[in-house]
Image (cartoon, rainbow, N blue to C red; front, side, top):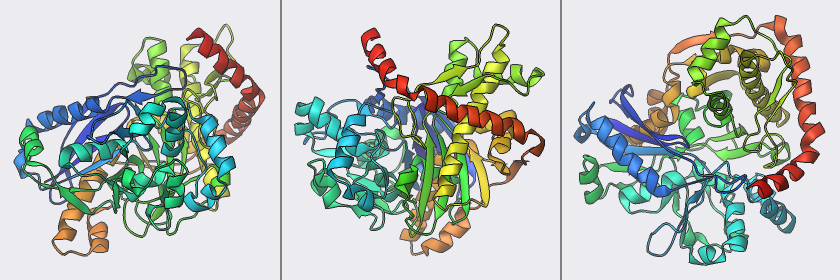
Length: 499
C-alpha cells in the first residue's frame, strides 16, 4: 500500500491506495488560518506537523500502516515557510492567499523586467519571491535569519526525513525556478538576496528523495519507508485525476478555484495572468488560471447566515429559483486571474427588499462560476484549449453547482470518482510510481498504468437555452469590478483604520 498526504489550507488529508492504485482508506484533520491584519493569511507550521500525527492515527484504525511501502506529499503552493540555521521555524508561514506584498511585486517587476522571460510568470502577491521581499523590508531581523525557504509540503518532508527537498511543480510557483530547465535560477534568486544554498534540492515529483527517519517512523507507526518529492496540490490533483497529457484539464473547486490544463512545453503567457508551471511528472508542463476564493466564498456566506453549506444548497435546490438579478464578486481574498488585484473586494450587488437567501446562495455559485470562466478565457487567449475537462474538489459534490459551471463555461464537464481526494490520491500515486521506478520499471509505462482517468459519476452538458442569461450577467459581473475597483484602495485604508 502507498500513502499520500495532502496539506491543504483548510485541512490535511491522508489517502491510502493499494498496489493496484485503488483508494482503500482516507482521513482528514482540520486546520485554521490566521489573519492578523487585512489581506494577511498565515498558518503555524507546527499545526501541520501535529495534523500529520492525527491523520496517521486515524488511518491506523482502518489499515495496517506497517504495510505502507512508500509515501508522497502534496500541498498548498507558494507559502513562505522560513527556517533558521538550526532548522527552527522563524515565523508563521505566509500563505498563497496573502496579499500584503503588492508593493514588492510592482517594485521587482520594475527593477527586473527579465523576471518575466526567465520565470514565465508575473510577480503576484501569492507567490513566494515577493513575500521574502516584504520580509526584507518589514521584518529585517527575520529576513537576516533565513537559512532555508521551504514550501508548506516541503516543510513536512523535512520533518519526516530531515532532508531539504522540493519538486518541479511546487517550486515553479515560487518565481525562483526556471520552468524550462526545471531547476532554481541564480538570477531570480539574486533578486531577493538568496542563493541556492537557501533552497531545497529540486526533484521530479515521482523521484525518491530519501526515507522516513527512524524516530518519525516509530512516532507515526510506519516503517522507514521511501519518500518521493511529491507535488503542488494542483499538479498532484491532476495526477490523481489522470490528467497527465496535453489537451486534458480540470477545474478544482477547493478553497481556491483552479482551471488546470496540461501542455507539452512551457507555454508562458504572463501578460494574460496565466500561470505556466512544471507538471509533477517528467517532460510535462501545465498552465493555470486561479481564483482565490471558490468554495471558501460559499463557506463564508454559510457562516455569515449561520447555516451549513449542505443546508444552503438543499434550500436552493428545493426552491423554484434558477435565476437572480443579484450579482456576487468572490474576491474575498483579492483575485489573481485575470485581474491580479490583492485589493479587489467581495461584493453583493443588486440586493432589494425582497431578495431571498436562496438568491444570494445562487449568486455566490454563479459568481464563482464566472471567476472560473475568467480563467478559461485567459487560457484560451494564451492559445490553450482543453478538450476534456474534469471536476475535482469538495465543491464538486454539488450537482447543482456542477451544472451551473457547465452552463457558464459552455463546455461539457465530467465529474469523476475520487475527485474529492484528488491531490492526496495523486501524492499516493507518485509514491507508487517512484518506488516501482526505483525497482527498475520505466516511468512513462508506470504513468500509463497507474494514472488512469477515474470512473465517470456524472457528465454535465451545457444548457444552451440559458446562455443569454449567463452571458448578460457575466457582462454585469465584469463591469461591476471595473466600475468599483478605484474604491478598493480607499476601502483598504478604511480597513486598516478599523483594525
